[in-house]
Image: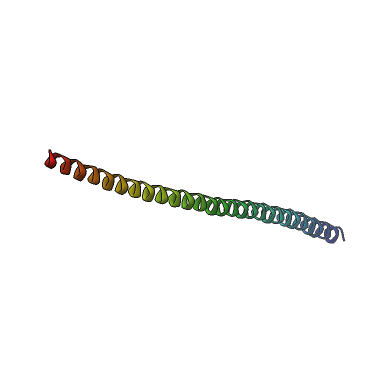
Length: 100
C-alpha cells in the first residue's frame, strides 16, 4: 500500500511536471508568435513607407525631368533664334561691305 501510494505520488508529480512544462512551452510559443507577428507588422509598415517614398520620388524626378527638357528646348530655340539673327546681321554687314 505504501509502495502504491509512492507510485501514485510519483506519477502525480510527473504529470504535474509535464503540465508545467507544457504550459511553459505553450506560453513560449504564444510569445514567439506574437513577436513574429509584431515583426511582420513592422516590416509591412516599412515596406509601405518605402513604396510611398518611391512613388513620391519618382513623381518629383519626373517633374524635374520634364522641367529640364522644357528648359533645354527653350535654350535650343533661343540659340536657333540668336543664330538666325547673327546670320542676318552677318549677311547685312557683308552686303554693306560690298557696297562700300
